[in-house]
Length: 335
View 1 (cartoon, rainbow, N blue to C red):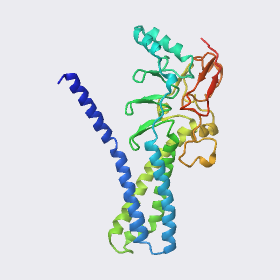
View 2: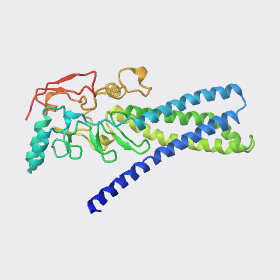
View 3: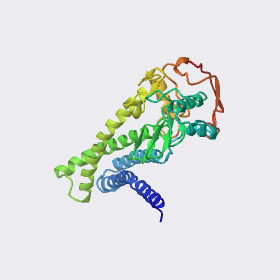
View 4: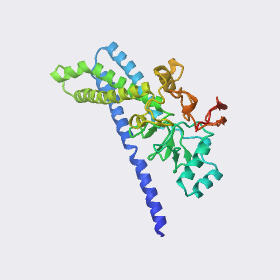
């Protein structure tokens, strides 16, 4: 067997193992949640609580919290990360021209010429057009390549092992709701279990299987709540500032230099970008985010902030943007 084929087979095997092991954090979370369901519904509500009204009320609210948690977690896991559309991919002729050119400065100029037709405002740290060699695409603003997902992700925030998915433009709202409903789930469990936790602890209730489940349920709920509280608070701050986790560590670079507040357009508009216009849908895990993930309003909308665009009509693909057939970008080239 040729060495090259052996290396390819080994590489495929390693990638397969990596995909399998990447589901372990999700299985851990799922196992803990399923155990908490059993412990709360059966050991606490059915076998420990004697008051019928209290039992029914607890079960009703618990199942609402459990359903919303499960829905948001499912959407966070199985919503595919959005990638740049074909408009940002190099054409066959441009790709040939770029690959045949050996001079770095000439390659940069080729990318600048292609970027004039696209709504790109940010640059690499070196000042060059951001280009992904692996995906062969010009990166839209706030787009980054994920080495785990092996693709460029629009408005990438981070790759989260607990959902085994990239958190980005397509599912950031779902991820925030997942954090919020996880906290609500933990708070409700801790608040309703507390009195029975005390009774088991001081010996007012008889020892049995329920005692272990109730005591452990209290500890687990508080532990997860504290962890989630800090993470949720951090993401609330990011939403208020209109930054991603990556942008919080490294400020996006514009024509005039790095600006950590370059996409901050005010609290209300920042919230609407993530959650949409319909406030009644903000807390439901359905897609309502504004825009298409390829360009975003800037803090300073002056023409000089976007010198990469000439007067061009950028036609968007019908698959990604069924409601927006054509968007007109009028930009002034400023050298």
